[in-house]
Structures are given as structure tokens and as C-alpha cells.
Length: 323
Image (cartoon, rainbow, N blue to C red):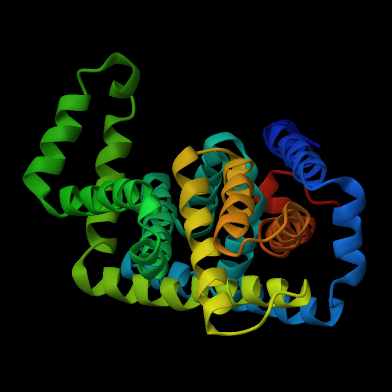
């Protein structure tokens, strides 16, 4: 393993350790014996559709990723190669602050010649449009439960501010020029302009609405997966449970994203368990079991798929090819 892959592995370790700690805390909060009982009685036949809905989410998110690349003029990357880079980026979500995802920009430059900063703008546009999508899915729940309004408004305000500023070119360029006087940021000023040019294109109204539409459908699929987890744990099926499942999954995703913690670890789990307990009047053992099941079917399933992609991506990781 060379320096590049070694450094990448070291960046993953804190996220993996944090994930293990969060898993233990969630289990212990619900009482180990009681949570184990929930797993034993879970209708495991429903878990395959839950994973299928997660794959549906990844498929639509990949369509958005490839759509963004097309918008930036990348026409020398095959669908399979694009998919390999996209999936190989999954484990990078559990690096501190998700900074590892910058590597996707490096991979794109190596494969297509697209400047790294413009590749990073694709990653950023993915996150921003995902954020808008889950906020759309959360909106009805926030109306029904006003206590979540401040966090919702803060998240929506931040996302919209980023998009609006990106579309006011004189203001955005002025902010970038101003940042050139800050010693720590100055050396990145050239890359910042490249990043901005990519963001300007990707946040144009047509691209934005297409991406948010795809994101809303894809994250809605994961919300239905949350509903199936609840049904598998014995919660009464129905439209109200479905609405709560979609809302809880979507809003916990927002909470996890704004914390900048690796994979939203800790924040997403706490919000999931807390909202399930409050909205469904669910016992803590059921809420804990549901939280663990959905996180393994979403975040950790993605990490698992990404690590498989790494096995076939020695070139991306900087590992010399064997003869």
C-alpha cells in the first residue's frame, strides 16, 4: 500500500471508529436485551426491499452525478467508468468533514482532464441538491410539527443563500477576489474561480430543478425504506406511518449534513431515535432498533459497496498495478 492509499485509510479510521461507538451507544440507550429482542422479531423478509430502495436511491443519484458531468462538458467518460468513480466515493463520506470527497475531483481530473476544482463543484452540487431534496420531503412534516421549524429554516436558508450567491456572478467573483487577501485562503484563489465557474453552471435553474427532482424521488425511496423498517418492527402500517417514516429519514439526513460530522454519525442517529420516540410514541428499544437497521441499510451499505469498488480501483487509490 503506497502513501496515497495509506493516507486514505487513515482518514477513514476515525469515521469507522465513531460509527462503532455510535452503534454501541444506540444499542445501550435502548437496553441491549430489549434491542436484541426487536432484531429477533423483525420481519427480515422486508430488509431486501429496504436495500433495494437504497439501491434505487443510489441509481438516481448516479444519474444526477452523470448529468452534472455532462453539463460541465465531460464527454470522454463512459457510463461504467463514471459509475465506478461515483461508487468508489461512498466510503469518503465517513472521512472527517467529508473532506475525502475532494478525491473524486482528483479522480475526475486523472480520467477526463476536468480541473479538480470543477470536479469538486460536482460533488458540492450533489450535496446541495440532495439537501434541497430532503428539505422538500421534510416540509410537510415540519408544518405538522412546528418544533422542528428553526432547524428546517436554518438549513433551507443556508442552501438557498449558497445557490443565490452562486448565480450573482459579480458578487461571487468579488467574494473570491476578497478572499485572496486572507493568507490561509490565498493559495486556493485560482482553484476557487474554477470551482465557482462549475457551480455557476450546475446551479442554473434548469439544471437545479432537474437535480432536485431526481433527488426528491431518490430520497423518497429511502424514506419508504424507513417505513418498511418500521413495519418490520411491528408498527401499524398506514399513511401516517409512511409520512412519519419519510419525514424522519429526510430530516435526520439534514441534521447529519449540517453537523459536518463523518457520515452525520451521532447526529443522524440521535435525531432518528428521538423523532421516532416523539412522533410515534415508540419505546426506546424499538426506536434504537429502527435507527440501527436503517443506518446499516443506507450509510453502511454505501460504505460496503464503495469498499468493493475500491477492490477494482487500484488506479484510483494510487496502488501500482500488478504484472
